[in-house]
Structures are given as structure tokens and as C-alpha cells.
Length: 311
Ligand code: SAM
Image 1 (cartoon, helix red, strand yellow):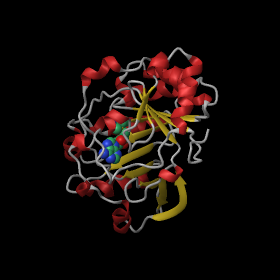
Image 2 (cartoon, protein in one colour; image 1 turned 120 degrees about the horizontal axis):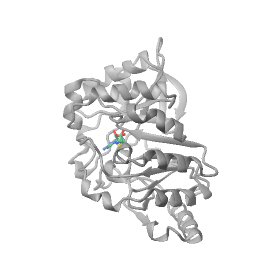
Image 3 (cartoon, protein in one colour; image 1 turned 135 degrees about the horizontal axis):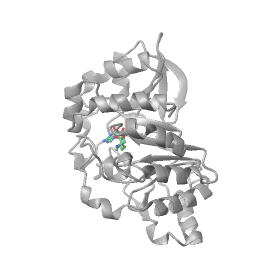
């Protein structure tokens, strides 16, 4: 289905929880008490089903950390069964991935994105508050063994914090068949962030000038590679090259509200309509029609970090 600006809306990101086992510096405060507001598996499937009836073809499970929900494999299997769904993916910090990868694959998950902002143990600990880098690296290996491919590694660089980690992250794409993607830091005020910490992707491309453009996009990422690389390097630039004109996304938050744009605070609560099939379908259609033209990063600072809005 098209929105009012003629964009085909085909992609739903589903935040299954706000809870997270890490405490990343750029992500906003984690509020564990919010568990009681989380949608049940039944509610998630009902709302997602309304969206697949509107033409959503791809769903990504995210959070918070989706693997802290102990019914994540059930949610995966039930979403997989929705008619019209082509791709089911998940974004995770990877800490629990080695224990879940095979079960998730069996439940019908296609691929995973794993967040990793440094391969240096002490920088990783400083960024996330946890000494679990080895578990994330095991998770990356296990995801490849379980064929949750393409395995994509997402990194956010912050000036003065982990910008030195870029080279070793790029090296992962040299030695492994993975896509390493750099996402520009988006400023969220509950994380105390401001624009001065952003490392632009243009600056990275100047620094790593051996990277060669593939002339192809993968979703929102511009893709590069280099001689001798097994994988690719991607650049996602919401700040320096906004891609709102081709945005195809809606976001379901973990409490049942739908966020129409990552960088706009408007939400629509669909939870009260669960169980009313026709009303839910109409509300989903209205959400798609009401999607704003573009994000407002840079005009206003967004109050809530991605743990609340689903990364
Ligand atoms: N817990 C999961 C994970 O770590 O991948 C899923 C949620 S996390 C919010 C999703 C992604 O959002 C991560 O790759 C994270 O790096 C990214 N992210 C969080 N805050 C961000 C920010 N302020 N700017 C850019 N990316 C951000």
C-alpha cells in the first residue's frame, strides 16, 4: 500500500520489548519496569497481520533486546506463518545469539543484524556497560553456522569514544562473508547526545579510501567492498544523506503504539483494537496514509532513544 506521498510501505519493524541486557551510551535509559506494558505474542501477531494485509512484506524484530523475551521463537514462528510475508529478520546485540541462532532459524527467521561498535574489549565495555564481547563474537559465528544470512554487523561510531574501532570493524568484512555497516549517530536527548559526537560516513570514506563503491544499495545502506574482501562494507547516513523520500517503514512499539517515522514523535495506539479485525485493518491503513514526509532530526532533538522506539 502507498502512503500519501506515493511511497510503497512494505517494511514493519516490530519492537517486542523495551528491555535490554546492555546499557549502550547512545541508546537512552532502559526501564525494566515496563515489562507489564509489553504486547503479548497474540497481540503482536494480530497487529502484524493487519499490516501484512496492507502489503507489508518484510518484518524485523527488534527492541530493546528482542532475545530477552523468552517467547521470541514462538513470536518468530507465528509471524513466519503470516500470508504475504516474504522476509523475517531480527536485530540483536548478539549476547544471547549463540544459544538462540539455530532455534530461530528453525522457527523461520531468515537473517540477523548484530550490533557491534568495537572489537576491543575495553571500548566495548565502556560503550555497553558489559564485559560480553566474546559472547557477541560467538553469536556472529553461530549465526553464520545457522545460515541466518546475510549476517550484517551494525556499528555506530562516536567521536572521542570508539571512532578508532572503525578499522578493525572493517577488517571483519575482509576476513568473513559479512556486511559491516556504519550507521551515523542520531541525536536522542534521553541519551544526553548531541550532534558534536557524530562521525559522518563521508569522513569515514575519506579515511578508508581503499573502499570501492559497488554502485548498489542494500535497503538504506550504500555498499562498498575492497580487493580481497569476503564481505562488504555499508554506510547508512540518516543525518548526512537523509533517505526519507524512499522510506518504506512503519514501526510497532512494544506497547502497541505505531510510530509513523523514527524521527517524528507521532504515534497511534493500535492495542485497544486487537480483537476487532476490521477496525484494526482500517487503523493500520490509516497509519500508512498518515506517514509524515520526513524525519525531524536536526530541527528538534528527539526525546526518546532507540531502546524505546525500536532500533
Ligand atoms: N538490542 C538490539 C541491538 O543492539 O541491535 C536492537 C535494538 S538497538 C536500539 C538497534 C540498533 O540501533 C543498534 O544497531 C544500535 O547501534 C542502533 N542505535 C541505537 N541508538 C542509536 C543512535 N542514537 N544512533 C544511531 N543508531 C543507534
